[in-house]
Length: 555
Image 1: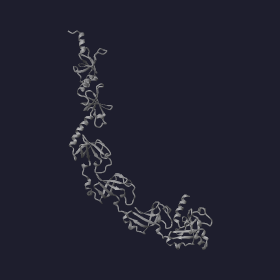
Image 2: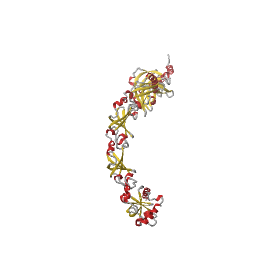
Image 3: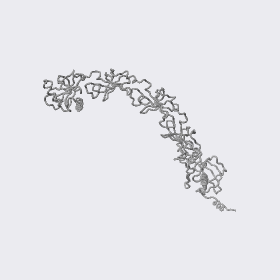
Image 4: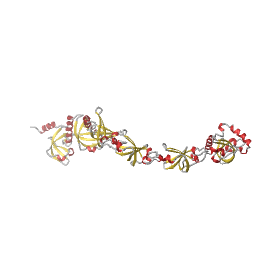
């Protein structure tokens, strides 16, 4: 028979620290479970080590790990949780190396991923949850999935899992199967995975296909996001399958009949149509006539008479408009529209209404460096060139004789129907005084007038009949004159003698000092004038006018 000391020694050899042994629950306390393992003392296990403490009953057999055979109180220290972990860890190591497949339940969210219970706690990085990293990790908590073991650290006793690798492997298998089954013309259900400027990638449950922007709609689309959004489920048509490169081209518009096939019947040239402005661009406006069909109203087709700089000046986005079909190009899917054709073109009757020689009256609408635009009626302007404002004066700018808003009279000189232009003239209302200049002025006549302009070589004097004469600096006085402005002022009244008339060149030369000359003196003076240098020639009135303008600006 064994003595007590021998029984103690034998018991000590059966139990060792770190061992897992069977124990019997002998008592349930408030937050503790008392367990007998057949050792000299019972062990106490915290209730928190049990997943469901309420399910534990007296007499239950449970596995416990011996942490210490004896603590300071002489009691054995046991752990049910560590026993379960060690059993599971050993089991995992025996059945699942790195790369193996294991089933587990997601229990919690932690920084960077999820906690998965596979018998022991394992870590699932967020990047390994799915093919696309999910934003809502909470939706996975409580669910069970299969995982691939990607890393085991025995020293730290942790495991890293991946669900993504299993999904990708499954997708690869599916991709090969789908590519083998898929043919052009098939209609497949897919999910919008990604949107770019040129199209959208559609997940076909195993393979991605490209839906190009040009195959989304028969109409014009500025960006795929106008009709698609990420996560949207759509039915698409398979257009092409490249099994070698594993590429699939998809179409959305091909589900519907091409509205351009019967476009000439629906919208014949000359027909009046209605539509909505869907886009405004610098050169025109796109109008939707029906889903998938748009026409362009070019900026030049908005008005017969107004020069419209940009369509947004007269049209607005989403505005309902009427237009006339001007042309159709079915191959390029283009329709040309016009708004101005809804009204009669005022220029159609312009040639008959404004015949050459017709006297007209209108308000000066605008001035340019070369002439003035006069409004003859709503939408029709005529232009008076500076050269047609006076028979006798050189007009450098129309502002010298008129201003914006003035009402002026003129004569129609020409109507250019193709270019929508009407040329007008003011001087043509009167007779050209140079046509009968010999009846108005003769060499030797004594005339009077006001100084109108000064130049370095002389002065211009305004005479009757709106004619200017030039007094050369040598013809002002008998004395030598260095600067004309020292002896004459603009607006000054002077008397002078006509000393030269050139009808062909439309020029008159005057002499102030010769106002009191005799006929003999005039003849002598005439010889001197005829010998002047070309640059000083009295007949060069056009250059003299230019020089006078420059001098005035300089002053």
